Length: 212
Image (cartoon, rainbow, N blue to C red; front, side, top):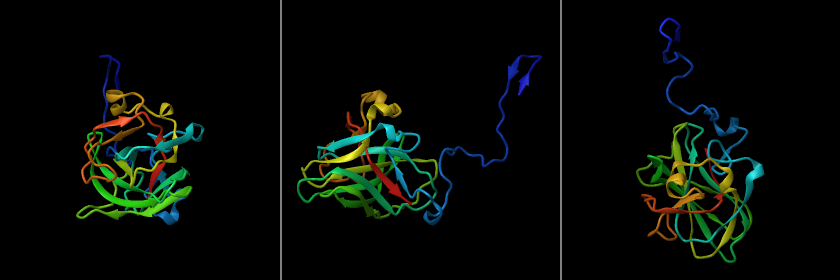
C-alpha cells in the first residue's frame, strides 16, 4: 500500500492463493496418465534450459561424474531417467544417470540411479532405483541435480543446449562463466553417494531428464 501523506510504500503478504515460497512456473502435480509431457529435460525446461533454437550436441569425453540442475515440477515419485544419444559409443558402453539433492546451490546426496545403453542412438530410458535409505519423492519447486557418468573410457555424443544461451547460474559466474556442467574428481566412472563439487567444463548442457 502507498501512504500518500508520508510518501511511503509498505508490502504485506497476500492471503490465499496457495502461499508459501514454491516456484510458480511449474506444472501441476498430476499423475503421469494426466500429463501431456511426461519427461522433464534439464537442458530445455524453465528456468535453466533454453528453447529448441539453442539445441546442439555435446561429446561426453570424460570419466568424471557430471551434474546439471533442474527444478522439480511435481511433488511426486520419480520413476525413470532419460537421455538422448546423438552419436553412439563405438563399443558397448553404459551411462549411469542419477538424481541428487541440492545443498546451497550444489549437488549433494544421491537419491537414485538408472543405467542406459549408449552404444546406439535415440532416446534412452532406464528405471530409477532408490539408493538405500533414500526417497525418490520430489517437492515441487525445489532444486535437484541430475548426475551422469560413462561406465568406460569410450566417447559418445548427447543432444544438448548451447551453454551460451542458458541463464548464468551463480556457480557459473563464480567459477567460469562458460561452464555448462559441474564435475567431481576422484570418482571416475561412478556416481558417488555424495557429490563434492570440484570444478566444471565449458560444455553445452547435455540432454538428460527425469520422469515422474
